[in-house]
Amino acid sequence: MIKKNSDPIRSEKEIPEEVMEKLLQNRQRILNHEVKQEVRRNYTKPILFTVLTASAFLILIANPQINSAIRNALGISQDPGVATIEDNGIENNLNLVSESNGMEITVTKFVTTKRKMAFDYQFKIDEKLKALLEKNNKTEDPWAKTFEFIDVELYVNGGTESVYGGVSGMGYSYVEGDTYYGSLVSTFNNDTIPENAKLTLQITRLAWQDKEEVATEMAKAMADPDPMASFTVENAVEYEGDWSFDIEYAPLTQTATPKISNVDNLTDIKANSDALQTTVTFVSPYSELEDNSSPAITIYKDGVATEGLLSSMIFDPTTGEFETAFGLSALDKSSVYKLQLNKVDSNGEPIEEIGSFELRNE
Image (cartoon, rainbow, N blue to C red; front, side, top):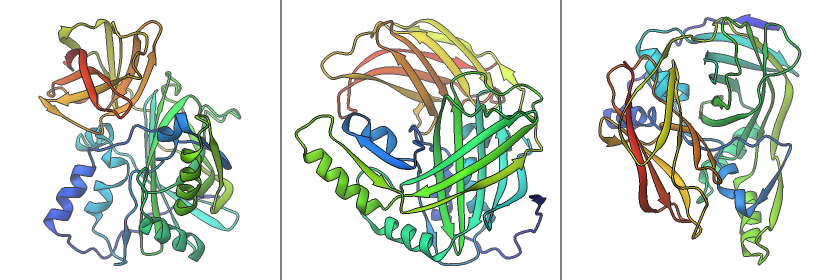
């Protein structure tokens, strides 16, 4: 069952300026990690750092009222592409409620283009989940703030086959009182979503792991002399169901072709922008991996190195071909971006610059 819920926030409290500043900084930060979606989590050493961080942060707030500015600074509004379309007055607010297995989930924001989808959702937490989240928030861990997972499907024009595949994703979450606020931003590898499509979003499972248990099993695996040592952790809390939402907004169609300039040591550069991101392909002389090094991209916005812009990167080590997506919206006609390709060591520390170029939408 889907119903429209338009109850306003009736009571708000102002927040300190320094807290608001930090939250607004977080609006510009996103993680470049793949969301792993399995009932049981199997971890191996070589992929450890890409699967453990499914969420950017968790904030437990005792006060049951929260300033709406915080909600806007959190959630998908952190994503730079989403922030741009919101700053340009493009509507993405929804209050669609779906009930399954006695649990209601509300989707409060949704926006998509052909290659990117983002939505906010919320639900009331029970005591079991609340206890786990409080425990996870207190548990020290070097890799992640939370261990949480969301399984979703996306259907087009009433179809029965989900198009949600070939994606990289990042999540955000926080808890206020007895309400859990979550977000998912997904970047597709191809132009997956058709123009003017009628979309149905389906959430099929929400799951959380015990951070302390993951840390313990991780330590055991890391101490194992076998370089391919792995471990499995069961979900500590899990909800399954069929929460479906008929989306009221069609995919955004704004596009632009960025002008490329100041190219250094990179070739075959092609770029196109949609309302939420810019996709770039190029070829680098850096092909075969050597000395345990790997490629990494640093993005500068108007001359300043900026975190949280890069949402995906695909690299072919045999040809030196790259495809990357980052948060430059087609609606941004003023900012100058620079993509710098670096060689980094196994710890992510830069070894040398490989090449770079600048681009700007006109």
